[in-house]
Length: 472
Image (tube, rainbow, N blue to C red; front, top):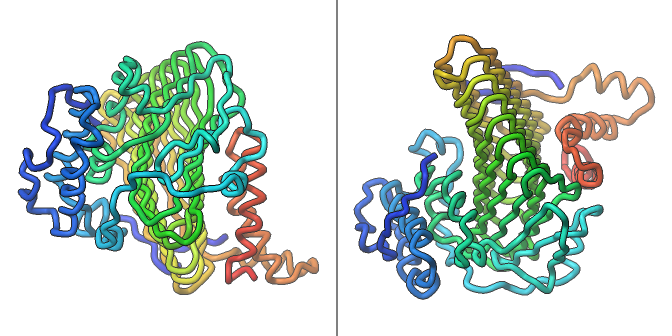
């Protein structure tokens, strides 16, 4: 791949939950008072008013406070629009205007849908959620030493102190408007705990299937206790052609000396919408790795943020997005270096064909006390079509004076010399382009630690690239 600042377009330029009891009705916090909201956006507030008492009335007081805080913050902030800096490249008006009702029950999914979504090599704990609701008949649950897996609402309403200590603390309801909505509306999800001092070799796989044109807000809480090690895979799939909206949030708390790997695979259909936040917080000597593989959805927005809150912690954020047609995929990352002697590495690759668009906005924030920071951010975009666009905005905000921070962004086409080299050795032009594109994607895929998952994604990506118009 060759990079150029004028190759199409290259642009460069979390708070704790309140334990006080808040009223459940949005009306009590002046639902219509926000000057930044819009009339269609008020539909979300009205929907919350309709279901709050009936659906969430039995929640404990602290959980009602979390939901109330979410709808209050949303009422204040309004639905995000391109007028807001963090959303100026991504217009969510089609989501707002669709006015999808919250899903109130699971649609129909089959064993074949689940088998198509399964990752070979993961068979101990596979939890399936259909339209945001847990499906015990389609799931696999097994006892694994050092691992606790539970439904999040069961643990939250059952008085689990661990859930109360972490839920809404890593990703607070005031983070941004969509996190606020997630905090208010979530109904089901998963709790995954890697117990102190234990290593769990096989990942936990969470499968989310969308079957109806509704809005779902699944929530996942992952806790890596002190000295533990484990991994989680979340995959999102669309069954049929339903244009659903998935608005998901995953909180990851990585305690001292723990190691957690998180992989997200987005394969929803191209008429769906997907917005998600993955927020992690690391303790001392902790290690967190995130892999974001995004292929599906008409509009996909991934906010992946991490706080290095303990000394000597390390965060690796990796991403691969492939778009075609009129798809839009947006990755926003924030790496907050809050303590000294921490390292972070970001590598994001985008492949775009036809009229698709990619967005990467990466911010590295180094606080005054975070001396000896080592941070690197790299974003590379590969354009297969003259009509494809990438907007990239790397950012550094550094308030310490003894740091090593770098960022780089390139947008370009397939390397002509590499293409010539392959064609000179008898490889036809189409196959040469496919090989180089697959190699470009493989630089991200090869960072996944669990072998069966890495091989599964690699095979899928290879087949997926065969369907790209520019590579046929």
